[in-house]
Length: 253
Image: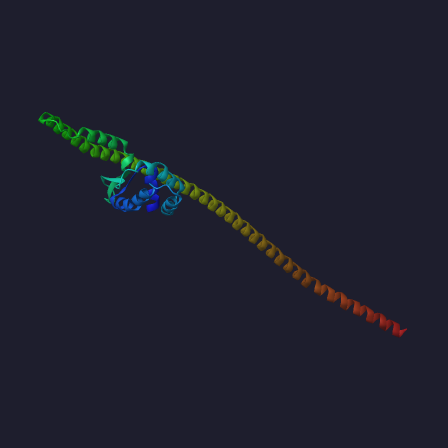
């Protein structure tokens, strides 16, 4: 997390975060800015070991290092912007001091105005006026920066909330579409099952009809057999009597 925040601070020169993270980041990034004053391969490797980002390392040694070369330390500034809605975390804007051109240019101009003069007492009144003007400018600058930072933070929060809402809407639409597809497939399956059930019932009815027809056929065959059996026995007995009569006539002759 510290590496990502340090890379963002180096590339964008200003980030918005909590005060606790900003204080931890200050102890992480300022030694790297000190190393950037000595643009050597060894220093670049040490910085890359911490940042793990080639673009951030290049930005650090090409732009940040040369610009802070005359500064002995204190490369960052923390400006508190209030409390975050939700968890009431104390928020702030952290920036690189030498890259705030408005503040640094006005500060240099104010410093030039407050030079001491060894002339007579006539120069004391302009000196006091210059000091008052400088103090007013310096007092107004943090308030302006705080307002700008607050507006930027509010805009970023609104944009992030809008993006989250859009993602949620898209997710809901996807879930709705998938649910409709599942319902359609389930309806088709139910219809197929109903059709199969009807076919099974029709088959069962046809089977019952076949069984009943077979029973009727067997009963008719049984009745036919029973009717035919007395007639066959009478014919047999008549044949036997006729054969016996013929045998007797032959024996008499």
